[in-house]
Image (tube, rainbow, N blue to C red; front, side, top):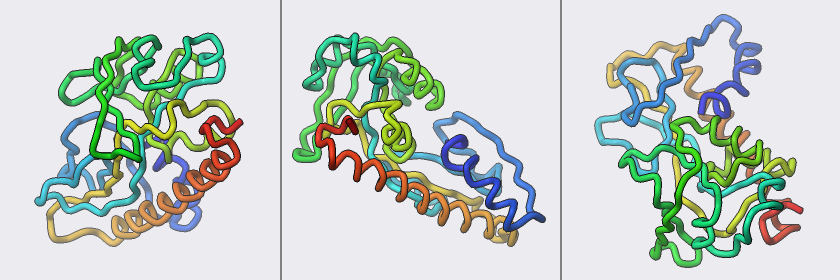
Length: 219
């Protein structure tokens, strides 16, 4: 998240607010350390606990993607069940079960499908999975707002559209203490507004391209 949501905003933020310095810590915890930092960005597939003071930044769907060169040499992929024959790159799951991929078709949102797979790679780091997918290692699931630029450039291709592997939200949380420094409010507003703007632009570019290629391949 730091790579895709925060790093692209640093230069513009510093140009506008040169007096504010940012200290960034990247962690991979299932429970975000909200009370330890001025602002905590985290992704979740459900609303945060009631005692967490958080603003929703963006919503996005998680989609399956792969590099064109992987797909050229891989077995056919026409239905979710075909994933069993493919190299899958999975994000580490909180429940530890990385051998099932739960998927939904937007036309039937109340009927999820669980597909048994044998992952080639399980990691707790999205960047690692994207890098492996770009190198042709296999198929991975990534939030559409993050992967949209790769899809537009053709570095990655969406597979099994319109199936998705989840709906995620990014939240920006602040500690429950009453006093929030002005610099924190300024940075929080900037992160929320600019992340929404960039996400909207990236997804719109992909959507426009996908409309030309209805199979979602962008080609």
